Image 1 (tube, rainbow, N blue to C red):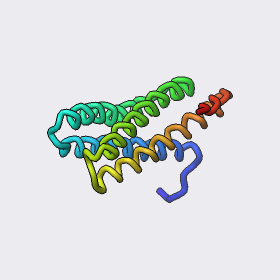
Image 2: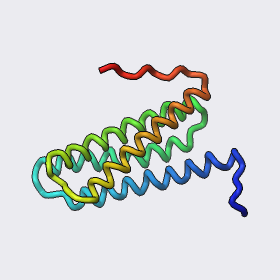
Image 3: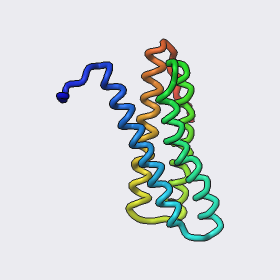
Image 4: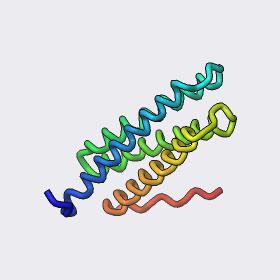
Length: 139
């Protein structure tokens, strides 16, 4: 098969790439948590990160099986919440100096990118469904 992909194949291909990327992110979270210090705070934060990081991949997998655009929009919202929570726990580990180095920096960057991709995906799906996008939060 050549490099050309029809428009119908492209979204499936991109969804598969993102499914694998989110799974790799989850596995990297596991690797990080396995190597956390044995302090009480590291155990608590590590447990929260492990749950939310694995949930990103598991929920994105479920999102890929959505039966309708409305179901997709709802499910991708859950993925966004879990990815954003993972980002929070990664930031906590980094900012409190519990973990330092390239692994945490790499995970932070990947998580930020995943959040952005999932948000853009939800916005696109909402636009295609004819929904108005939610206004930006004022702060």
